[in-house]
Length: 425
Ligand code: URA
Image (cartoon, rainbow, N blue to C red; front, side, top):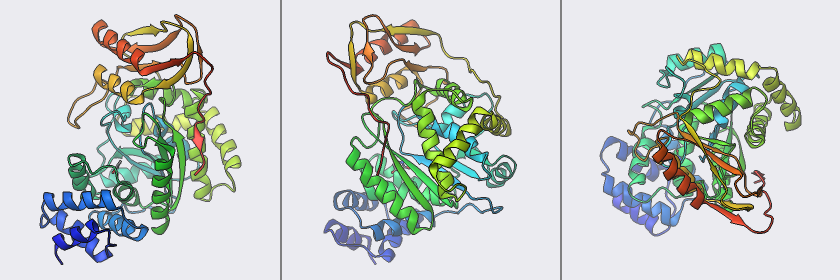
């Protein structure tokens, strides 16, 4: 077999065999296939796509380039994956909430890159929190508490790590086949019974429109099912931040509000929806309505918050329900109207500019900065009404952020309908 003929086959829109796909992935990891050939292959996949069988073979090759987490007992193992967006703190609530129902949640998560926030960065807002856990540490924590949120270890899908780095610099990220195999190889390595995918679409999401998001959701679900994991997907709106808070400590504080049975309606709703899907998929409840009732009780009774505190403590963090934030200032509306649009990319860039996000993985971040969005699309806004609270390190940084945020908000003169949060597949 030759890499050149496999690249040419895909370039000519021909279907690849499992053997050919394995040859490329294994050769790449072993160093026998150089970056330039792998990039050409990735570009051929971006342009020509892959069939479901090919995506499954690619996922399998990436998965078996590393190890799979072992199971230490019989409790169902469940997890959620979000394709990323602004203000998405659902994982912080969902993992401890589900752990109240005798399931294990081995959540291997990532750091924020570009405008998408990272769950690990949010948790590291708690002083001392350690997300570098070994497999035995993860197993012990699951045994004791039922949930863990940690970084992916080096031996999980190493082929994906290498290929993703190459895709990032060769314009080959946007491909349903490549995204599916990348996400699913890492999730399958956690030996899950059930997985729910929150596929986001909109101005602050990876997928800008609903149709693209639906295609990705279908591909992810089909691949998960092939590997015997009960996989469900939810399409959710990301045309504005989820909840009010954007920024690391800001979001951890908001997650705690939801764990206390309060918090913004959209964060609570999406968390309950995704959690209910998972509990039903794991066989814990007959339907989502029943699951929801039990989930609400776990929030209002404080059981979920207690699990969260136990998880933070087990990972060396100092829990604080209200982490300290940078000094704040308030941006008010220069004129009245209805909020029509939020440029999510710009809002994300503004948070990065404040120091709350990064453009390169090695960049340090400031956990205390961020934004509180006080208005949502469809809201009637009066002149001088508070729009956004800005948490910044200096008055200059706050002023720069205010100018950028104003440019990112589009107002209308007529009423605007609010956006539905969850769409069916
Ligand atoms: N997230 C991933 O893990 N992989 C991709 O390819 C895109 C988003």
